[in-house]
Amino acid sequence: MEKTRKIVLFACLLLVSFLASSSAQTCLNHSFSNRQYANCSDLPALNCFLHWTYDEAAGTVEVAFRHTGTTSSRWSAWGINPSGPSMLNTQALVAYVNSSGIPHAFTTSIDSMSPSMQQSALSFQVPSLSAEFENNEMRIFAVMRISESLLATNQVWQEGPVSNDQLMIHPTSGDNMRSTASVNFLTGQSGGTSSGSSRTRRRNVHGVLNTVSWGILMPLGAITARYMKVFKSADPAWFYLHVVCQTSAYAVGVAGWATGIRLGSDSAGVTHNPHRNIGITLFCLGTLQVTFASRVFMFLKSYKQTFMVEICGACRCLLCF
Ligand code: HEM
Ligand SMILES: *[C@@H]1O[C@H](CO)[C@@H](O)[C@H](O)[C@H]1NC(C)=O
Ligand SMILES: *[C@@H]1O[C@H](CO)[C@@H](O)[C@H](O)[C@H]1NC(C)=O
Ligand SMILES: *[C@@H]1O[C@H](CO)[C@@H](O)[C@H](O)[C@H]1NC(C)=O
Image 1 (cartoon, helix red, strand yellow):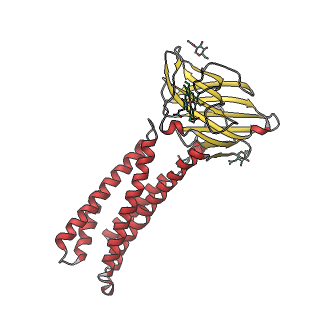
Image 2: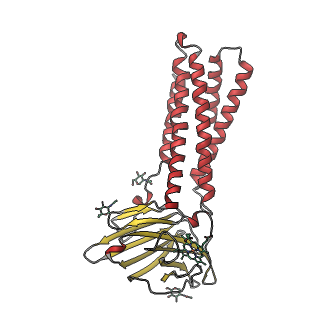
Image 3: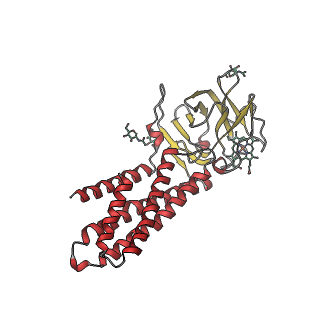
């Protein structure tokens, strides 16, 4: 009875952990103090979010771009680029905290691969533009008067260092090279172009692998051990089933973990700390247990496998609670 409870509790823990890892749209939860937007999208790189409202009658798109986890010595920028999902020709809104300690926002049209980053007019009107910096989050607010042909286009965002009011070149590797996506202000759709979607795909692969491993195979293995072994006729089949389940769960888990680490190392300077640390810890504990279980198995081969399961159960409880 005690053991059943522990197994149930363990399965619940796993469920919670993979639910937490599934990609919920977190921008939906953000509320601005005195603004509201009809649509939002979690941008696939650099901890950024776009919120917007399309006003058909006025022919304007009101946008709020948020860049979280930054500092007051970095600039943030967002823009649209009708010519493609790339930097060149981006009609950008830029903001940084200047030497007066005030967030300063301006528009700049990027017309070369080493842009001046000086204030310049865009190919459309921007009747209103401002920025605020708070809790390591830069927010750029703007109203853009854009033609219908620009409602479905590409969006490009970026961040880089500031030194003495000079906006320096951004990193040219990792997520800073993947900060482009499509956007449709009309339908509310935003996301995958080339590089953006490959990251999303890897994210999904990571989620699916870990769910299958920790969420399905591992509990299945535990259940076969717990419930099948009571049937004498199922002996020793249950044990092989159990071993197959746990081994393949571990193999899939390794793949899931590796995709996670790869995702993490590709986000230069950006780490999702709790998630990453929980992932690494879980994986270490899982590795310990699998190694330990096979060692004990070698020693106890001649004994009843039931004994093994008791030991494994004990280890798991020790590791988890
Ligand atoms: C200080 C000003 C800037 C400089 C000197 C600069 C320079 C560069 C260079 C040299 C690359 C190519 C790197 C490579 O291919 O290895 C690049 C890429 C990129 N830049 Fe910038 N950039 C600046 C500002 C911006 C701004 C304001 C944005 C966004 C609004 C931006 C967005 C991007 C993006 C998304 C890429 C990757 C895609 C592409 O290569 O077009 N950059 N930048
Ligand atoms: C969003 O907020 C709701 C309630 O306000 C909460 O239940 C939910 O977990 C939140 N989701 C995220 C992803 O933070
Ligand atoms: C900083 O930005 C504010 C707001 O745009 C501006 O009024 C102020 O003059 C700027 N200070 C410097 C030193 O550029
Ligand atoms: C975007 O906002 C409009 C207007 O409120 C709404 O009808 C639409 O469903 C939203 N789209 C998405 C994808 O949320």
